[in-house]
Length: 331
Ligand code: COA
Image (cartoon, rainbow, N blue to C red; front, top):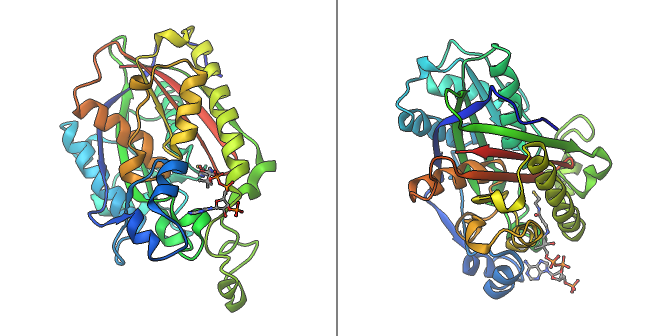
């Protein structure tokens, strides 16, 4: 937990990229035993974006990074670090961030990935704060990029209705005014690892004909358990981040939760007593895009002209690991 203090980092640019191709619930009805009504009622998702065959995660991340730099009025030469949060890397190594660095032509800067499931964007902000406030970096391009549909089993109705592909990004630098990151809270619990994981392809179960036949290269999830932990942990993170920033629930102007399931979003919003209109949600059009969901939400809120200077934003996420985190931010 980090206390409210004077020097802070701020977001100076936002942007995102989502592939054009749409997979809606009616398309899924033709693939597995499900229905549009079931998916909407249980998840809030109507459609999601699907990357094309030839796209990898870095391709989405590069587009998001380029747009974000443009929106910030910057060029690649103006950043000194690239961090990519992802759980669906292009390759086990090199990191997706290195592919992104190549794609952006940002040959001068260090680049690395963080892999903490859907909490990756918030972990990235926390990491960026440390790097910027110690003087190690001046301006960071933080990208959350995910292409989970290539790691999803489209014969498994428990998971295939949930995920979509997208990337969102921000530019972070030291704040020169009262705005910026006020506090954070981050946690992990590795004992919950097998509730949501991708079993094969790493060193535990390397790729073999058998691992492929057993469909172990697709993500697996115990949805019910994930749901319960998510509601509990997101509530905890939100309250702790507020406390660390010496804020009250009523101070929140916008609550931006990770977009995993509309019922998780609404349950967490209720726990925080945030009125529904202040709880941002775009899950109906993207599904769960993991690390991309919070930066996309930030960008959309800004584009819609809803964010006013001084607004208090609470960002909150959980993900595979388990990991969970929240960030309180003054716009
Ligand atoms: N369409 C129709 N029926 C489905 C279905 C689908 N796509 N997926 C599951 N079902 C069925 C189940 O097989 C089960 O049937 P049964 O009662 O005959 O066994 C029934 O629906 C209820 O399943 P359950 O798992 O209890 O549903 P749920 O209300 O918990 O919703 C999830 C399932 C996956 C939507 C929900 O648990 C969830 O969103 N969990 C969190 C997942 C998440 O956020 N993951 C990402 C973390 S970052």
